[in-house]
Image 1 (spheres, helix red, strand yellow):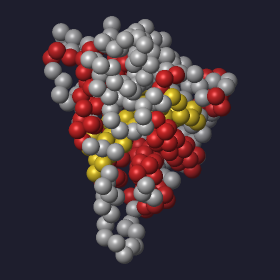
Image 2 (cartoon, helix red, strand yellow):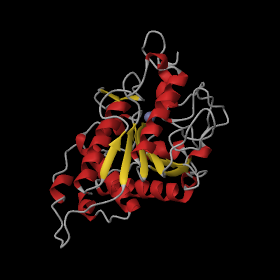
Image 3 (cartoon, protein in one colour):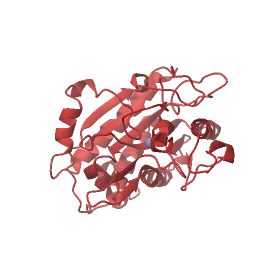
Image 4 (spheres, protein in one colour):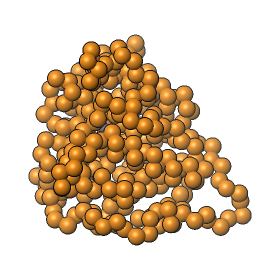
Length: 319
Ligand SMILES: [Zn+2]
């Protein structure tokens, strides 16, 4: 019975009976979007929103070395990318317009690998929580007896391992990469979460804003009218019991504060991006395209480089 909800609790502090889909935080829409799901649905279901033709002029073509008198950039910062889910934890599952099944874990990994490649081309070192379809470091104790899914504590253990790897990497910033879902398939949009309770809360919010703003600008530049759901404080999430974390833990585990004896927190500013809703067939169709994954990766790269103080100008023409 856990299986349908596992994807939810992996990213969020949920474990109970939620009516929303995977990675859907049951969050009130941004204040600028007061009509909420109704208006989002109206926008999301608009026809012609999702171009399916690959756009010429890939980001790669715009990344010729910038003439400069200095050698290739040596950036002291390191970035930690966390493609959500993996292995038996598929994350949310959606279907494209033609009925093709898409799994969150697969798309999140593709976006993360593309982002890592772009960052590394710019001389920024990257570590990832996973580089293939697995849950690194998991043990049989993390799974239910038949091995088909993680236990609630197994999910928490997986997140802790991701956090531990992020902390061990010495990264300056953490980006957790997910895709959203909701019961109503007409709901879609782009949303970025941050945690406002940490000592580096202002940096968290700035980073989330950079990601959200670039994603929306990039989507608009390509003709998508994906609803802008804005940035959101993870403390506004409606949470439930999460493994051994209490039900009062109103944070995303990857971003939130520690709980003595239960959770050692991430030590760097971070954000969690939900770029599109896989429960919306139009957005699932887009997310399944390499060109859209390139677009999202380009946005993440620019936002990260801006956050780190690198103009990232070699990516600005990839919109
Ligand atoms: Zn997720």
